[in-house]
Amino acid sequence: MMKNTNRILAMVFVALMCIELMNFVIAVDESTTPEVTTTTVADTTTTLIRRRYFSLSYAPETPLTGDCIILTVTDRSTSDELKDVDVDVNFDGKKTFYGITDANGKFTFCPTKAGSYEVVLDKTRYQTYEKTVPVGQAVVTTTVVTTTVEVTTTEEETTTEEVTTTEEIPATTEKITTTEEVPTTTEVITTTTVQEEKVTPDITIWSIAAIVIVIILVVLYMMTKKKKTEPEEKSKKGKEKEE
Image: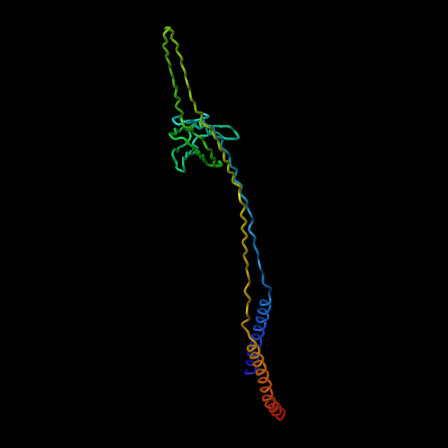
């Protein structure tokens, strides 16, 4: 009975040793797996916003101080009158008039000083527009009338009339500045690296040595026990033959 029990224990022990060896081989194979690197490059997207352009006219063509200037804002491509356009009128670096165009694309302002008035137009999806409107000083015309009367003894009367008229004409200067925006392209590249961690086997060289030593001890134990049991079996067989 004891002999059968020892054999079963030895078989179970050997099976456990085999399982441990298989786990060790699997761990070594996984540790030698090459690293995997994945690189992802983001697509470059360029968005172009198409802008439209203003056209501006004003009346009178040669405005003077005291005149009310009527601005007319239209689309350069379609010539349609534009409403709700933001209008800023600057003079000497300061905003003097501002507002929006009406349903007919018109805006009116009345300057009181001579000089250059900078008109700035702005509206969604339109390129900002600037134009200088020169305003001249109103000129007062002076007429001088001179009358000379001469009296002689011959009772003849001579009358001389002299009329002098002086007129100043203001100069008109128009400056048109157009600014265009060029869309920029931004390229974004994102790199993601995924590395697989190496698996370090749990079984070391010392574990393998211990397993081998245990196996050797078990085998030696089995051989020693077998030698002890052989004389007993022979004596039993001799007794049986004598009987």
